[in-house]
Amino acid sequence: MKRVLLLALATIALGVACGGSLYAIGLEPRLEKHMWSDSTRLTLKLDPNSKVEAGKNFDVNIHITPGTGFHVYSASMSADGGLVPLTVKVPTALDSFFEIVGVKEVGEMESRFDSSFSIDVKSYSDPFDVVVTLKAKENSAAPIPFNLYVYFQTCMKSQCMPARTFAVPMTVLGEKPIDLTIAHGTVPKSHG
Figure 1 (cartoon, rainbow, N blue to C red):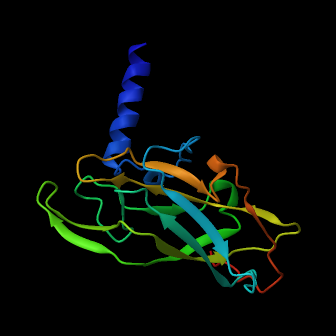
Figure 2 (cartoon, rainbow, N blue to C red):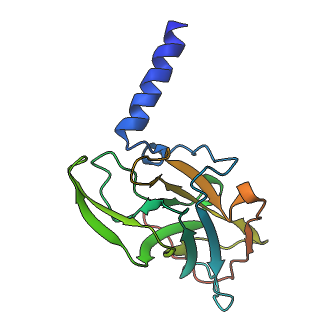
């Protein structure tokens, strides 16, 4: 029993030391199964004219609408102060097909120094977009059900919600992954 308790405490401490994110140590996150009071909505779109081709990059757009009175921390913000910046991850089941090569936010970012955390806080209170550039790593014989994980924390002036991970499209709302077909292209050979 003592070993189980010590293992649980060590796991919690490791999660906190890694900025509260299991992403940092390569573990699959626990996905949320219901919405919280901040009601942050996330939608994922792929330009219908995009051709997903092995060896090439393509963009997907995640539109994020924070709940009324809440803000979402920017991916460009440091996690050093204890607040949790937005992170996008390819699910482990898809990481042989896709790799994130860039993340860009588009929207009206608010930036200020927070003396409580001694850091520059970057956040969005209004809807904004996260453009994720992915590389298609290999061909697929059949369409692949595609989704991404988005890990984020929302706060308002007097309280913060716990950081959590949603699958986008939001499976918590009954949305289904997008079926992507990876066209045959030139896949660079790895060296080594």
